[in-house]
Length: 235
Image 1 (cartoon, rainbow, N blue to C red):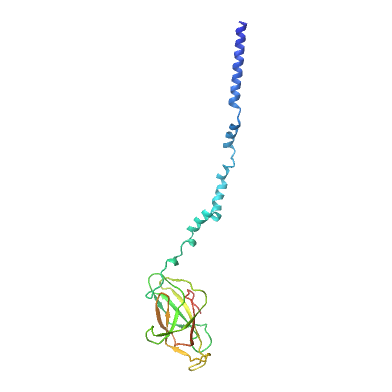
Image 2 (image 1 turned 90 degrees about the vertical axis):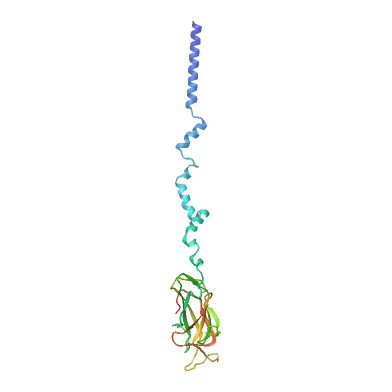
């Protein structure tokens, strides 16, 4: 009986030890368990960018990121193709060229000195004028019967001027001035020229015979200096 009791005590002790070992195994965290348990409660370096840092990244991308910047630029009106690029050049039937009007600012003398000429879009849709006009002296006959003047360009470089229906562009013609009274004289010694009309050539839009709104075109040496067509009226 004592032997049996000893075995029972031994078995009980062994069972207690095994139970304790099992308890320790189930409750004591392992190294892997520590990492897994810490993951949800403590943000790691890889989880933090998903919060405020990610928002900051988006804002930075619109100003400095190549991909984001390109997308933003494409949507910006300033980066889209300009309307001027699609506007057709004015044709001879689209425009009306004004009479010449003596400019307020002109060389001293008794001839024309300088004249302002405008072109108006008389059509129902936008079109553009560009470059510099050509100028030829003419009588009252056909525009083809004229005397081209030696032309010099001056002022800002030529640029397309898009004209809405009814809008105007201007050019200024500056002549070599006639001096003196009566028939006058030219400083060069040449005889002054006097024409009732001139022919203005508009690139792509034909040639237009015009007169002065007061008097005639009087100048020397068969020369004229012209500005490019502009949306700003010269003085």
